[in-house]
Amino acid sequence: MEFNYNISEEAYLQFNDYYAKNSETVKKSLMIQRITVPIMYLVMAVFLSFVLDMPVLFLLIPFFILGVLWAVFYPAYFYRLIRRNARKMVREGKGEGILGDHTMIFTEEGLREISSTGEKMQSWSGIEKIGEDPSNFYLFNSGMSAYIVSKNKMDDVDGVRRLLHSKITKKV
Image 1 (tube, rainbow, N blue to C red):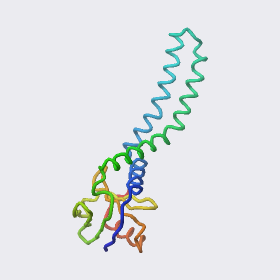
Image 2: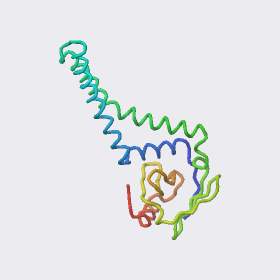
Image 3: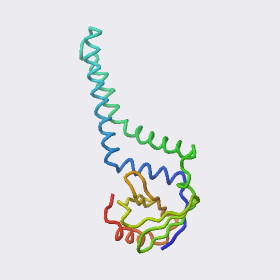
Image 4: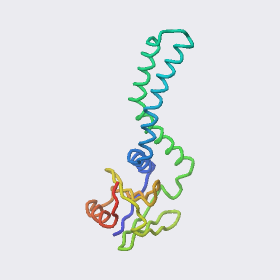
C-alpha cells in the first residue's frame, strides 16, 4: 500500500497536541503544576498574614480565588504554550524532513517513508504504538517520536486503520 501526502505545519502542531494530551509524563507534569501552584498561593497567604500582621482570612480568600483560577485556566495555557513552542521550532528550521511531501509505503515487513531528506525503513516491530486523531495516524517509533501519516488523501482510511492495527500491537 502506497500513498503520497503533505505534512503541513498544522499537522505537526496536531501531533504535538496529540502527544501532550496522551502522554502520561506530560499529563503528570500538568497535574503537578495545577496542584502545586494553588498550594503555594495558600502557603504564601498564611506567610504574608504573619509578616504583614494581617488576618489570615483577609489574605486567604483572594489567594484561594487565585488558586482556583489557576487550576481552572492553566491547562488551556499549558497546551497553548506547547503549541506555540512547536510552531517556533518549525519556523526556526528544526522541522527539516518532517514537513513537506512524503511518500509512505506499507509492506508486510514494515514501512518505508520517503521525504526530501531521504528514505527511512522501519520494521513493524520497531513501531511501539499507534495513535490517531481525526486528521492523522501517528506511528510511534519511540516515546516522543512518530511518523505522521495524514489521512486527508487516503481513499480507504478504515482499510489503513485495520492494516495498522493488525501490524502494531500496542495502541495509545
